[in-house]
Amino acid sequence: MQVALQAIYESLQLGKLLRPPAQWSRDLKDCKNLWLVGLGKAAYHHVKALAKIYPDIQKKIAVVPTFYPSENDEIFFQGAHPELNDLSFKAGRELMRWLGKIPGDTSMIFCLS
Image (cartoon, rainbow, N blue to C red; front, side):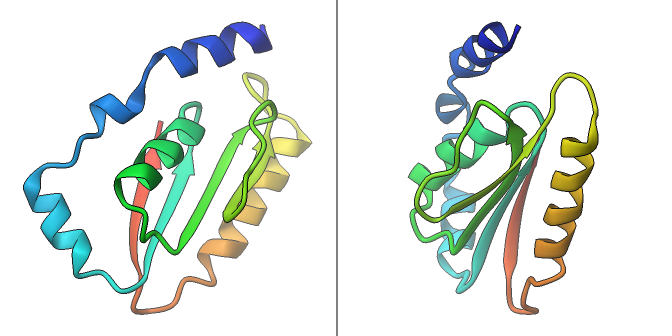
């Protein structure tokens, strides 16, 4: 099942769906501290696609299925899917801890799937 889910998520090609309109580009260029937060089945792909579009993102944080590792400057918390278990709740608590650290001058893109 894990392999099937991964194949489905990767087939979505979210990068093609997230081409930024001109308004997004203009608004986000003015952001000095931009965080990207992802939660849900496709959070990994949201983060990857938006990070390519907006390379100035300061923090990339997401709760993702266990088969997606974080890379470099990403902070990925591993959650279970499709069943909820202790790993899922731990990932949620870690995400909330990070959200509590967001400075007041931060703009955030929140991807929920």
